Image 1: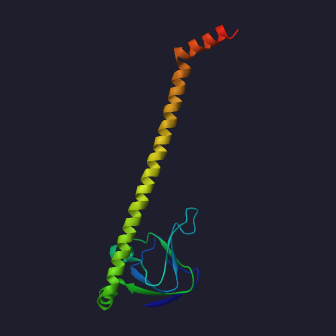
Image 2: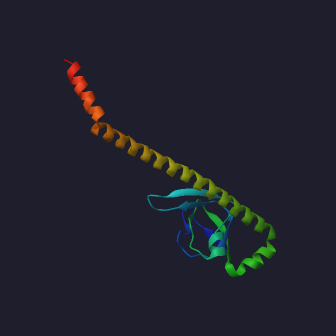
Image 3: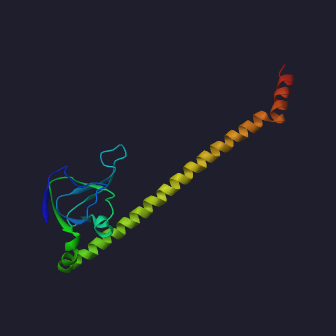
Length: 157
């Protein structure tokens, strides 16, 4: 089914159950996580020949992103019951869909690695701060600190 979408029109909303595969025939669409919230993040811009919606189509799970028309666009939607005939007629598109999914997996792995490194560094910084505070407390409570204060007071006169 062909659909013309206007600039800023939402095509697919994060959290919606939508079992369609979409192909951008003309124009551009933006892919967001957290669209319209304070955690809104643009994940990418898709152009002619790009696909989206594979996850919902193949798994029946809710969309993990929102897709918004960047400019006026023409979109092809393929419903689940049409997929087999679509693939038979457009078998070359199957490779493009699989390639898109493979790159998505690589991007997720890269993002997961970066997030893991960030969390590890934050925890290390927090642990270092905690150790520093513990060390300061031990020093302030220790006999060495008391001896240093006595020494300073005796010899600073």
